[in-house]
Image 1 (cartoon, rainbow, N blue to C red):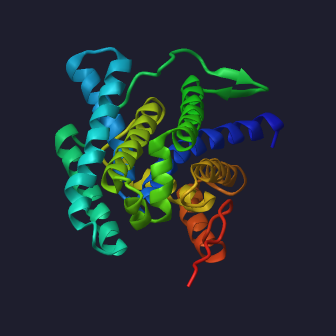
Image 2: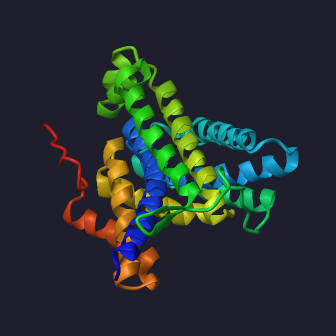
Length: 293
């Protein structure tokens, strides 16, 4: 394999990995605030793309306005999921709450199927034009947008966690909800905002990727699995580890296509997920939690 061909596979892996990283960030934010896995995260990704396409076609607004509308509506959906589906059962066990998120995922998928149809939909590229050539490899302009959005999301989350009272409240909730309440933190508000933020990140990812791959009502399950695998691979609870896990998973997938076969591309995420759960459940970049008794 020539160097340019290998570089092309690496670029493809980093592009896919950035997508997985954005979805993994949503899993990580909700897990850090609640201790549960939100299996509706993939549907937030789907809604970001589907609603943006609908707004663009129905209202004939500029692309940026359509995407902003798609993200905003998905944020509202994320907040409603927490308020209507999870908060009434906040005293239930984690398994019950996880099952609720699976039910919400199925519901959102069904609603999207009836609202937007079963056909694949797409958005125009954010920056139309030919691919950018780099050392003999082609980089799609939309991929540059995906990388930029991932970088801005990471920096933005770092600022939120380190420089805002909301970020400090999320850190406190990740340690102990009971202790956070005793310190005067409105934990219900923190959890609601965490769901809204996770939904927004998923929607941004969905809108950014739609010009590359199109979207449909059923894309959430596949991307949700890969985002979850990326979060587990990096280490749940740390947004920087989630990004690293997403990029690593994307590279492993792409290189498996280069050296093995494209047939097994979608199975790689499941294999990686199982391997990490068996061999290093805290993730490659996480630390094993120690429980005091």
